[in-house]
Amino acid sequence: VPDMKNRIKTMTYDSASKRKKNIAARVLPIIRKAEMQEHLGQTPSERLVTRLCRQSFLKLWTHSNPKGKRGKELCDCLIVCGSHIVIISVKDSEFKATDDATGRKRWAKRAIQGSVSQINGAERWLRSVDEFERHDGRIVHLPESTLRRYHRVAVALGGQDQVPLQYGDFGYGFVHVCDERSIEALFEALDTITDFLEFLDACETLVRSGTRLVFEGGGIEDLLAIYLSNGWSFEFGPNDHQRQELLIVCNDLWQSLVDSSDFRNLKAENEISFFWDRLIEHFADFLLSGEMFDMHSKQASNNELALVTMALEPRRNRVVLTKALLEFLLKEELKSAARVVQGREGNAYVFTVGSSSDREFRTAELAARCMVVRGRLPNARTVVGIATDRQGVPSPGYSSDIVYIHLPDWSKKNESDVLQIQREFGYFKNTDWSRFR
Image 1 (cartoon, helix red, strand yellow):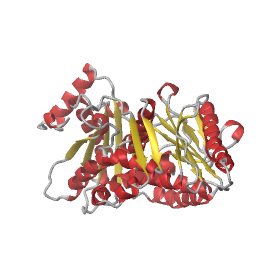
Image 2 (cartoon, helix red, strand yellow):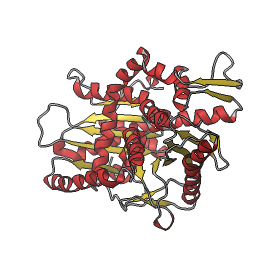
Image 3 (cartoon, one colour):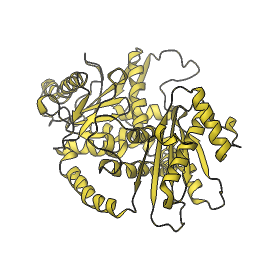
Protein backbone atom coordinates (compact mmCIF):
# COMPACT_ATOMS: atom_id res chain seq x y z
CA VAL A 1 0.00 0.00 0.00
CA PRO A 2 1.64 3.30 -1.08
CA ASP A 3 1.17 5.26 2.14
CA MET A 4 1.90 2.34 4.51
CA LYS A 5 5.37 3.59 5.37
CA ASN A 6 4.09 7.01 6.35
CA ARG A 7 1.28 5.64 8.48
CA ILE A 8 3.14 2.91 10.31
CA LYS A 9 6.45 3.68 11.92
CA THR A 10 8.95 0.86 12.08
CA MET A 11 12.35 0.34 13.54
CA THR A 12 15.10 -1.74 12.05
CA TYR A 13 18.62 -2.71 12.84
CA ASP A 14 21.13 -4.74 10.93
CA SER A 15 23.76 -6.60 12.91
CA ALA A 16 25.55 -7.42 9.65
CA SER A 17 26.33 -3.77 9.02
CA LYS A 18 29.99 -3.04 9.54
CA ARG A 19 29.29 0.48 10.79
CA LYS A 20 26.82 -0.73 13.37
CA LYS A 21 29.11 -3.54 14.41
CA ASN A 22 31.80 -0.97 15.12
CA ILE A 23 29.39 1.23 17.10
CA ALA A 24 28.11 -1.73 19.11
CA ALA A 25 31.66 -2.88 19.77
CA ARG A 26 32.49 0.54 21.22
CA VAL A 27 29.27 1.40 23.02
CA LEU A 28 27.97 -1.84 24.53
CA PRO A 29 31.12 -2.66 26.55
CA ILE A 30 31.01 0.87 27.99
CA ILE A 31 27.36 0.44 28.99
CA ARG A 32 27.97 -2.97 30.53
CA LYS A 33 31.09 -1.79 32.39
CA ALA A 34 29.16 1.17 33.77
CA GLU A 35 26.32 -1.10 34.83
CA MET A 36 28.70 -3.35 36.74
CA GLN A 37 30.50 -0.44 38.39
CA GLU A 38 27.67 1.79 39.56
CA HIS A 39 24.25 1.30 37.99
CA LEU A 40 23.58 -1.81 40.02
CA GLY A 41 23.64 0.26 43.20
CA GLN A 42 26.12 1.74 45.60
CA THR A 43 25.96 -0.74 48.50
CA PRO A 44 25.88 -4.57 48.56
CA SER A 45 22.21 -4.55 49.62
CA GLU A 46 21.25 -2.16 46.82
CA ARG A 47 23.17 -4.23 44.28
CA LEU A 48 21.35 -7.36 45.46
CA VAL A 49 17.92 -5.82 44.91
CA THR A 50 18.84 -4.22 41.58
CA ARG A 51 20.30 -7.48 40.32
CA LEU A 52 17.09 -9.30 41.23
CA CYS A 53 15.02 -6.62 39.51
CA ARG A 54 17.06 -6.77 36.33
CA GLN A 55 16.87 -10.52 36.20
CA SER A 56 13.10 -10.28 36.49
CA PHE A 57 12.13 -7.04 34.77
CA LEU A 58 15.13 -6.56 32.44
CA LYS A 59 17.53 -3.65 32.39
CA LEU A 60 15.56 -1.39 30.06
CA TRP A 61 13.06 -0.63 32.83
CA THR A 62 15.25 -1.00 35.95
CA HIS A 63 16.93 2.18 37.23
CA SER A 64 19.16 2.05 40.29
CA ASN A 65 19.83 5.17 42.37
CA PRO A 66 17.87 7.56 40.10
CA LYS A 67 18.17 11.30 40.76
CA GLY A 68 15.33 13.25 42.30
CA LYS A 69 14.92 16.80 43.57
CA ARG A 70 18.06 18.91 43.18
CA GLY A 71 19.97 15.86 41.93
CA LYS A 72 19.70 13.94 45.20
CA GLU A 73 19.13 10.19 45.24
CA LEU A 74 15.43 9.51 44.75
CA CYS A 75 15.32 5.90 45.90
CA ASP A 76 17.42 2.77 45.65
CA CYS A 77 15.69 1.26 42.64
CA LEU A 78 12.90 2.45 40.36
CA ILE A 79 11.01 0.28 37.87
CA VAL A 80 9.14 2.10 35.10
CA CYS A 81 7.33 -0.16 32.63
CA GLY A 82 4.22 0.90 30.76
CA SER A 83 1.92 2.69 33.22
CA HIS A 84 3.53 1.02 36.25
CA ILE A 85 6.03 2.70 38.57
CA VAL A 86 7.57 0.55 41.33
CA ILE A 87 9.46 2.46 44.02
CA ILE A 88 11.91 0.30 45.97
CA SER A 89 13.75 1.48 49.06
CA VAL A 90 16.44 -0.65 50.71
CA LYS A 91 17.60 -0.18 54.30
CA ASP A 92 20.26 -2.46 55.81
CA SER A 93 20.47 -2.10 59.58
CA GLU A 94 22.08 -4.51 62.03
CA PHE A 95 19.68 -5.67 64.70
CA LYS A 96 21.00 -5.18 68.24
CA ALA A 97 19.12 -7.21 70.83
CA THR A 98 18.15 -5.72 74.18
CA ASP A 99 16.39 -7.16 77.20
CA ASP A 100 13.14 -5.46 76.24
CA ALA A 101 11.34 -4.35 73.08
CA THR A 102 13.62 -1.34 72.63
CA GLY A 103 15.96 -3.13 70.20
CA ARG A 104 13.11 -4.22 67.97
CA LYS A 105 11.59 -0.74 67.94
CA ARG A 106 14.90 0.87 67.06
CA TRP A 107 15.52 -1.54 64.22
CA ALA A 108 11.98 -1.10 62.85
CA LYS A 109 12.40 2.66 62.92
CA ARG A 110 15.67 2.55 61.00
CA ALA A 111 14.92 -0.24 58.54
CA ILE A 112 11.16 -0.05 57.97
CA GLN A 113 10.09 3.49 58.80
CA GLY A 114 13.21 4.80 57.05
CA SER A 115 12.21 3.03 53.84
CA VAL A 116 8.58 4.10 54.12
CA SER A 117 9.63 7.75 54.48
CA GLN A 118 11.94 7.53 51.46
CA ILE A 119 9.22 5.91 49.35
CA ASN A 120 6.73 8.60 50.34
CA GLY A 121 9.14 11.37 49.40
CA ALA A 122 10.01 9.72 46.10
CA GLU A 123 6.38 9.26 45.13
CA ARG A 124 5.49 12.83 46.07
CA TRP A 125 8.28 14.15 43.84
CA LEU A 126 7.47 11.78 40.94
CA ARG A 127 3.87 12.98 40.93
CA SER A 128 5.14 16.50 40.23
CA VAL A 129 7.41 15.70 37.25
CA ASP A 130 7.23 14.13 33.80
CA GLU A 131 10.76 12.73 33.66
CA PHE A 132 13.73 11.85 35.81
CA GLU A 133 17.47 11.43 35.37
CA ARG A 134 19.13 8.07 35.78
CA HIS A 135 22.38 7.68 37.72
CA ASP A 136 24.22 7.58 34.36
CA GLY A 137 22.63 10.82 33.14
CA ARG A 138 20.09 9.28 30.75
CA ILE A 139 16.67 10.93 30.86
CA VAL A 140 13.66 8.63 31.31
CA HIS A 141 10.20 9.92 30.45
CA LEU A 142 7.41 8.91 32.83
CA PRO A 143 4.00 7.69 31.65
CA GLU A 144 1.14 10.17 31.49
CA SER A 145 0.25 11.26 35.01
CA THR A 146 -3.39 10.14 34.77
CA LEU A 147 -2.33 6.62 33.80
CA ARG A 148 0.39 6.02 36.39
CA ARG A 149 0.03 3.24 38.93
CA TYR A 150 2.42 3.43 41.87
CA HIS A 151 3.63 0.35 43.76
CA ARG A 152 5.73 0.61 46.92
CA VAL A 153 8.25 -1.98 48.15
CA ALA A 154 10.40 -1.57 51.26
CA VAL A 155 13.30 -3.99 51.72
CA ALA A 156 14.39 -4.14 55.37
CA LEU A 157 17.60 -6.12 55.86
CA GLY A 158 19.50 -7.15 58.96
CA GLY A 159 16.59 -8.01 61.26
CA GLN A 160 17.78 -11.61 61.80
CA ASP A 161 14.14 -12.77 61.98
CA GLN A 162 13.85 -11.08 65.36
CA VAL A 163 11.36 -8.38 64.37
CA PRO A 164 7.90 -9.06 62.88
CA LEU A 165 7.62 -7.09 59.63
CA GLN A 166 4.81 -4.54 59.43
CA TYR A 167 2.75 -4.78 56.28
CA GLY A 168 0.09 -2.45 54.89
CA ASP A 169 -0.82 1.23 54.76
CA PHE A 170 1.54 3.43 56.75
CA GLY A 171 -0.46 6.57 56.05
CA TYR A 172 1.10 7.25 52.64
CA GLY A 173 -0.29 4.30 50.72
CA PHE A 174 0.14 0.54 50.87
CA VAL A 175 3.76 -0.56 51.33
CA HIS A 176 4.96 -4.14 50.86
CA VAL A 177 7.75 -4.83 53.37
CA CYS A 178 10.24 -7.61 52.58
CA ASP A 179 13.34 -9.04 54.22
CA GLU A 180 16.27 -10.95 52.72
CA ARG A 181 14.38 -14.21 52.34
CA SER A 182 11.10 -12.83 51.04
CA ILE A 183 12.58 -10.48 48.42
CA GLU A 184 14.53 -13.34 46.82
CA ALA A 185 11.46 -15.61 46.95
CA LEU A 186 9.30 -12.96 45.24
CA PHE A 187 11.71 -12.46 42.38
CA GLU A 188 12.33 -16.19 42.01
CA ALA A 189 8.66 -17.06 41.61
CA LEU A 190 7.35 -13.81 40.09
CA ASP A 191 9.99 -12.99 37.51
CA THR A 192 7.93 -10.84 35.16
CA ILE A 193 6.60 -7.38 35.92
CA THR A 194 2.99 -8.50 35.43
CA ASP A 195 3.25 -11.59 37.68
CA PHE A 196 4.98 -9.51 40.35
CA LEU A 197 2.43 -6.68 40.33
CA GLU A 198 -0.56 -9.04 40.23
CA PHE A 199 0.66 -10.57 43.50
CA LEU A 200 1.14 -7.15 45.09
CA ASP A 201 -2.36 -6.15 44.01
CA ALA A 202 -3.82 -9.40 45.37
CA CYS A 203 -2.14 -8.78 48.74
CA GLU A 204 -3.49 -5.23 48.92
CA THR A 205 -6.99 -6.42 48.04
CA LEU A 206 -6.78 -9.14 50.68
CA VAL A 207 -5.72 -6.75 53.45
CA ARG A 208 -8.10 -3.96 52.47
CA SER A 209 -11.00 -6.42 52.41
CA GLY A 210 -10.61 -6.78 56.18
CA THR A 211 -9.02 -10.22 56.23
CA ARG A 212 -6.96 -10.67 59.37
CA LEU A 213 -3.46 -11.96 58.59
CA VAL A 214 -1.82 -13.95 61.40
CA PHE A 215 1.88 -14.68 60.79
CA GLU A 216 2.83 -17.76 62.83
CA GLY A 217 6.52 -17.18 62.26
CA GLY A 218 5.93 -16.85 58.51
CA GLY A 219 6.70 -13.98 56.15
CA ILE A 220 5.66 -12.67 52.76
CA GLU A 221 7.34 -15.64 51.09
CA ASP A 222 4.94 -17.94 52.94
CA LEU A 223 2.01 -15.74 51.94
CA LEU A 224 3.29 -16.10 48.38
CA ALA A 225 3.25 -19.89 48.76
CA ILE A 226 -0.46 -19.74 49.70
CA TYR A 227 -1.13 -17.53 46.66
CA LEU A 228 0.68 -19.82 44.21
CA SER A 229 -0.71 -23.06 45.67
CA ASN A 230 -4.24 -21.66 45.41
CA GLY A 231 -4.03 -21.03 41.68
CA TRP A 232 -2.46 -17.56 41.87
CA SER A 233 -5.29 -16.26 44.03
CA PHE A 234 -6.40 -15.56 47.59
CA GLU A 235 -9.97 -16.61 46.89
CA PHE A 236 -10.83 -19.91 48.55
CA GLY A 237 -13.67 -22.40 48.27
CA PRO A 238 -17.10 -22.10 46.64
CA ASN A 239 -17.80 -18.64 48.07
CA ASP A 240 -14.92 -16.83 46.44
CA HIS A 241 -16.89 -13.58 46.42
CA GLN A 242 -17.10 -13.55 50.21
CA ARG A 243 -14.45 -11.96 52.40
CA GLN A 244 -12.08 -14.29 54.23
CA GLU A 245 -12.10 -13.57 57.96
CA LEU A 246 -8.73 -15.05 58.89
CA LEU A 247 -5.62 -16.28 57.12
CA ILE A 248 -2.85 -17.95 59.13
CA VAL A 249 0.63 -17.83 57.56
CA CYS A 250 3.08 -20.44 58.88
CA ASN A 251 6.83 -20.28 58.48
CA ASP A 252 7.39 -23.46 56.45
CA LEU A 253 4.97 -22.93 53.54
CA TRP A 254 7.43 -21.42 51.08
CA GLN A 255 10.14 -24.02 51.65
CA SER A 256 7.58 -26.82 51.34
CA LEU A 257 6.45 -25.39 48.00
CA VAL A 258 10.01 -25.02 46.71
CA ASP A 259 10.78 -28.63 47.67
CA SER A 260 7.66 -29.98 45.93
CA SER A 261 7.74 -31.79 42.58
CA ASP A 262 4.97 -29.52 41.27
CA PHE A 263 7.14 -26.44 41.74
CA ARG A 264 10.15 -28.10 40.14
CA ASN A 265 8.02 -29.21 37.18
CA LEU A 266 6.66 -25.70 36.76
CA LYS A 267 10.18 -24.26 36.72
CA ALA A 268 11.19 -26.82 34.10
CA GLU A 269 8.16 -26.02 31.93
CA ASN A 270 8.93 -22.31 32.13
CA GLU A 271 12.55 -22.75 31.06
CA ILE A 272 11.76 -22.40 27.35
CA SER A 273 10.11 -19.02 27.93
CA PHE A 274 13.40 -17.35 28.79
CA PHE A 275 14.02 -17.23 25.05
CA TRP A 276 11.36 -14.48 25.05
CA ASP A 277 13.31 -12.60 27.74
CA ARG A 278 16.50 -12.88 25.71
CA LEU A 279 14.69 -11.64 22.61
CA ILE A 280 13.60 -8.50 24.48
CA GLU A 281 17.13 -7.98 25.78
CA HIS A 282 18.48 -8.50 22.28
CA PHE A 283 16.38 -5.61 20.95
CA ALA A 284 17.03 -3.55 24.09
CA ASP A 285 20.79 -3.74 23.61
CA PHE A 286 20.47 -2.03 20.25
CA LEU A 287 17.94 0.43 21.64
CA LEU A 288 20.22 1.50 24.49
CA SER A 289 23.26 1.79 22.24
CA GLY A 290 21.41 4.23 20.00
CA GLU A 291 21.04 1.80 17.12
CA MET A 292 17.23 1.98 17.16
CA PHE A 293 16.39 5.48 18.36
CA ASP A 294 17.69 8.40 20.36
CA MET A 295 18.21 7.05 23.86
CA HIS A 296 17.79 10.59 25.24
CA SER A 297 14.36 11.05 23.70
CA LYS A 298 11.80 12.49 26.11
CA GLN A 299 8.93 10.62 24.48
CA ALA A 300 8.37 6.87 24.41
CA SER A 301 8.79 5.74 20.82
CA ASN A 302 7.06 2.92 19.02
CA ASN A 303 10.30 1.00 19.46
CA GLU A 304 10.13 1.05 23.24
CA LEU A 305 6.37 0.54 23.28
CA ALA A 306 6.81 -2.69 21.31
CA LEU A 307 9.26 -3.96 23.91
CA VAL A 308 6.99 -2.83 26.76
CA THR A 309 4.16 -4.87 25.23
CA MET A 310 6.44 -7.91 25.11
CA ALA A 311 7.75 -7.34 28.66
CA LEU A 312 4.25 -7.11 30.14
CA GLU A 313 3.49 -10.68 29.09
CA PRO A 314 3.36 -12.91 32.20
CA ARG A 315 5.54 -16.01 32.40
CA ARG A 316 2.77 -18.45 31.42
CA ASN A 317 2.08 -16.43 28.25
CA ARG A 318 5.77 -16.30 27.38
CA VAL A 319 5.84 -20.10 27.34
CA VAL A 320 3.11 -20.19 24.68
CA LEU A 321 4.59 -17.32 22.67
CA THR A 322 8.07 -18.83 22.68
CA LYS A 323 6.85 -22.26 21.62
CA ALA A 324 4.90 -20.72 18.75
CA LEU A 325 7.84 -18.60 17.61
CA LEU A 326 10.42 -21.40 17.79
CA GLU A 327 8.12 -23.86 16.07
CA PHE A 328 7.58 -21.37 13.29
CA LEU A 329 11.29 -20.61 12.88
CA LEU A 330 12.80 -24.06 13.30
CA LYS A 331 10.43 -26.64 11.83
CA GLU A 332 11.26 -27.10 8.18
CA GLU A 333 7.93 -28.70 7.35
CA LEU A 334 6.10 -25.49 8.25
CA LYS A 335 5.75 -23.62 4.98
CA SER A 336 3.48 -20.81 6.19
CA ALA A 337 4.76 -17.30 5.58
CA ALA A 338 3.63 -15.97 8.97
CA ARG A 339 2.12 -16.97 12.28
CA VAL A 340 -0.21 -15.09 14.62
CA VAL A 341 -0.38 -15.67 18.38
CA GLN A 342 -2.42 -13.80 20.98
CA GLY A 343 -1.06 -12.77 24.36
CA ARG A 344 -2.03 -10.63 27.31
CA GLU A 345 -5.23 -8.57 27.03
CA GLY A 346 -5.74 -9.75 23.47
CA ASN A 347 -2.45 -8.28 22.20
CA ALA A 348 -1.42 -10.01 18.99
CA TYR A 349 2.04 -10.99 17.77
CA VAL A 350 2.89 -11.58 14.12
CA PHE A 351 5.98 -13.66 13.30
CA THR A 352 7.34 -13.75 9.78
CA VAL A 353 10.59 -14.43 7.94
CA GLY A 354 12.26 -12.94 4.93
CA SER A 355 15.60 -12.29 3.34
CA SER A 356 18.01 -9.70 4.72
CA SER A 357 18.81 -8.69 1.16
CA ASP A 358 15.59 -6.65 0.94
CA ARG A 359 14.95 -5.18 4.36
CA GLU A 360 12.63 -2.48 3.02
CA PHE A 361 10.28 -4.99 1.46
CA ARG A 362 10.35 -7.29 4.49
CA THR A 363 9.52 -4.44 6.86
CA ALA A 364 6.69 -3.23 4.64
CA GLU A 365 5.29 -6.77 4.47
CA LEU A 366 5.48 -7.12 8.25
CA ALA A 367 3.67 -3.81 8.76
CA ALA A 368 0.97 -4.80 6.27
CA ARG A 369 0.45 -8.17 7.95
CA CYS A 370 0.16 -6.45 11.35
CA MET A 371 -2.51 -4.15 9.92
CA VAL A 372 -4.50 -7.14 8.67
CA VAL A 373 -4.31 -8.83 12.07
CA ARG A 374 -5.49 -5.64 13.80
CA GLY A 375 -8.49 -5.50 11.47
CA ARG A 376 -9.42 -9.17 11.70
CA LEU A 377 -8.99 -9.49 15.47
CA PRO A 378 -11.22 -6.71 16.86
CA ASN A 379 -10.02 -7.16 20.46
CA ALA A 380 -6.35 -6.98 19.42
CA ARG A 381 -5.92 -3.22 19.56
CA THR A 382 -2.16 -3.64 19.87
CA VAL A 383 -0.11 -5.70 17.40
CA VAL A 384 3.64 -6.34 17.55
CA GLY A 385 5.35 -7.81 14.51
CA ILE A 386 8.74 -9.53 14.48
CA ALA A 387 10.53 -10.46 11.26
CA THR A 388 13.81 -12.29 10.94
CA ASP A 389 15.84 -14.49 8.62
CA ARG A 390 14.86 -18.11 8.18
CA GLN A 391 17.10 -20.23 10.39
CA GLY A 392 19.86 -22.03 8.53
CA VAL A 393 19.36 -20.17 5.24
CA PRO A 394 22.59 -18.61 3.89
CA SER A 395 22.35 -14.83 3.72
CA PRO A 396 24.72 -11.84 3.65
CA GLY A 397 23.92 -11.12 7.29
CA TYR A 398 21.46 -11.75 10.10
CA SER A 399 18.88 -9.10 10.88
CA SER A 400 15.59 -8.56 12.67
CA ASP A 401 12.81 -6.02 12.30
CA ILE A 402 10.04 -5.07 14.71
CA VAL A 403 6.77 -3.21 14.14
CA TYR A 404 4.37 -1.72 16.68
CA ILE A 405 0.74 -0.81 15.94
CA HIS A 406 -1.73 0.50 18.52
CA LEU A 407 -5.13 1.47 17.12
CA PRO A 408 -7.86 1.67 19.78
CA ASP A 409 -10.39 2.67 17.11
CA TRP A 410 -10.95 1.12 13.70
CA SER A 411 -12.07 3.44 10.90
CA LYS A 412 -13.62 2.81 7.50
CA LYS A 413 -10.32 3.93 5.98
CA ASN A 414 -8.47 1.29 8.05
CA GLU A 415 -10.88 -1.39 6.84
CA SER A 416 -10.49 -0.25 3.24
CA ASP A 417 -6.70 -0.47 3.55
CA VAL A 418 -6.86 -4.00 4.93
CA LEU A 419 -9.19 -5.16 2.17
CA GLN A 420 -6.76 -3.72 -0.38
CA ILE A 421 -3.81 -5.46 1.26
CA GLN A 422 -5.60 -8.80 1.22
CA ARG A 423 -6.72 -8.39 -2.40
CA GLU A 424 -3.26 -7.46 -3.66
CA PHE A 425 -1.06 -9.70 -1.51
CA GLY A 426 -3.36 -12.33 -0.03
CA TYR A 427 -2.05 -11.90 3.53
CA PHE A 428 -3.99 -14.13 5.95
CA LYS A 429 -6.69 -14.49 3.30
CA ASN A 430 -7.67 -18.03 4.34
CA THR A 431 -7.09 -17.70 8.09
CA ASP A 432 -9.83 -18.96 10.40
CA TRP A 433 -10.04 -16.04 12.85
CA SER A 434 -12.62 -17.80 15.03
CA ARG A 435 -9.76 -19.86 16.53
CA PHE A 436 -8.36 -16.76 18.26
CA ARG A 437 -9.81 -15.74 21.60
